[in-house]
Amino acid sequence: EAGVTHMTHLYNAMNPINHRAPGPIIAAADDEYCEAELICDNVHIHPAIVRNTFKMFGEDRVIFISDTMEAAGLEDGMYELGGQPVIVKGNRATLEDGTIAGSNTNLMKCMRTAVKQMGIPLEKAVKCAAVNPAKSIGIYDQYGSITPGKVANAVNPEKKPIKTGNTDLTGREYATVRKQRYRKIKNRSRDGCDTVLLLFFVWHDKNHRFKCSLRLSSS
Image 1 (cartoon, rainbow, N blue to C red):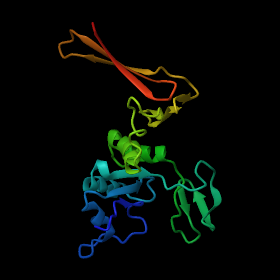
Image 2 (image 1 turned 180 degrees about the vertical axis):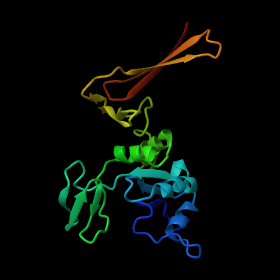
Image 3 (image 1 turned 180 degrees about the horizontal axis):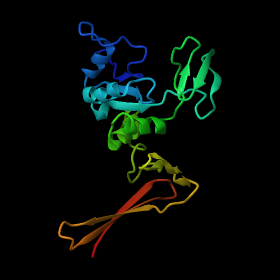
Image 4 (image 1 turned 120 degrees about the vertical axis):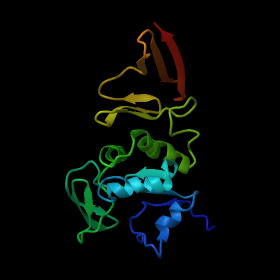
């Protein structure tokens, strides 16, 4: 009723759940119009809590964030956040008194952690890292999915292990090894008689908009 529709890094700096005083976490989960951010770095939130958050909110209302600070991608040491000294060791960033001070990770690593260490299906993790954030800030008509007419920004991850492969930014490819722009899927029917090849071509035009085509052949 007050217009609150978004929870910043759920659980952090919030009153915990209590059966007599449920607090902001349950209030957000109980409101179908409220979405929640999650920091899946395995420091801020326990994997069991992440899994149960998906049960409470559903995959359409969860948004992955990194909450990273200036040390992201750098070596361990002393850094600063809001004028306060921060100690960084691994993916943990803390104030001198041990209080967590942001994170030392990135969104791709958070997505990988959610899948590999927290039991979140890859498809749901991608949705929470790409689709839901774009919808939340009102730019899903231009970003957030590989769809004809949208800006051609894309990360092509390698599934095993999940890591960044090729990256396209406004239609320009950034990668050490250029890969083919199509995916070939072979599916043999149960009787073994027919083989169907589905070729999914993705490219971009001069305005960096995605174009797609499907071709089906059999043998």
